[in-house]
Image (cartoon, rainbow, N blue to C red):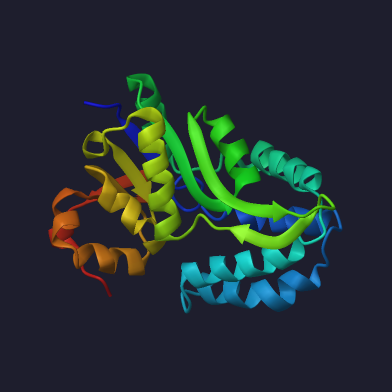
Length: 242
């Protein structure tokens, strides 16, 4: 029998929103990018989601597209500095349930690992703040001039997350059937299916629909909804997607 691990997505699972949004705002503040990028390219998608007329995944993917273009020509030093400041200032804005679960897993000696679509600079800072054992995030590649090229190695899709988890299984001798996973979007579905004890934290409509269509996953997953200062465990038989 191998070690027990707890795999955590970050955006929307630990952190209440998307950390990349905070980086984007800091880049505007430090004049690394023009504020018009937010107003013309990102804000419409944000407002659509904020009004519940669009979905969260669309907003985040739009943010990623704009961010990828925005960091081209920027040095890793600047982004690492911004990531550090973001986590210093915003790193406590997390869900109570997720924070307590991280603490419990650490106390039990489980391997706590972040698998996130956020830029790896952010994931590194967030995993450090919560004393995680390892992490994987989206890598924004650097060219020969030492600046971001605009090429990326993503970590928000099912294929990438599966690959990273299998790497962790080999690295830490992890027993997946005894392990845990925490996610909130459709990109986390494969991660949730790979472990014996999956948790969906405030799941998006798309993720919830996919869970309800998977009989095997339905039998083992726990749905967590946190609102204000109350956390609810939702039995699947009582769920009704509207």
